[in-house]
Length: 295
Image (cartoon, rainbow, N blue to C red):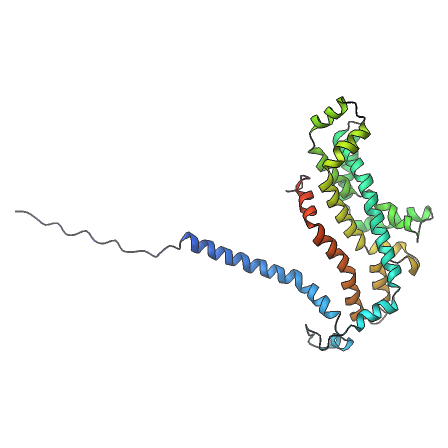
């Protein structure tokens, strides 16, 4: 007698797993949300500054504060250019920033090349001092620099505002890191062909270092254009004020500040920085990527 076997039980369907496309879409949305939030955090203060430069004085006293101006006005910019000797302060900032940038491009590559490719006694000690200087806050060197410039009679002069920054430790470290990546065989080939050390440096090394030189120039210019504390201490007369110092000095009183003028001056101060960064941002990323600083 034949027995019939019971049919196999059908498998119970479990919860459906999301597809790879769905998981990828969810992670993309999360990334966009995070990036958008970061963009708002970064751009929000800048928009507040631009809109604040168009607000009348009464808008700064409103509670709660309003994001948009009640009436857009250009009076803040008018007072900025009327009450401040704007061309003079702009000229001071431009001269100091450009001079420090040119000096940095002259001295830092030489020091970086010597620390990376030349053999001499005490090189390790000097490199250690450069790294130690990078770790020291800038405010600690303020008083020693002021005393040194005062003893040299350079207070309230362009040289006193320029000389301490012609060979910054960051520039030396940046150039040294880049030049470590230059093959020694290339330099030896130039020496075998009869080139002396200066010819090797200027004809072989410097053309290769163009991207990192551009990066160093941009970062140096931006840093010195926005410099405030050191020019505030060294500039003893209004005629030597840079634009940030003049803006903070003349737009801020003992009991109250001219917020509209501060906002307008900040917009004018940041415009050259934005222009330089937008035009040369490719050089910044390319130069840093070729110096061994990529983590």
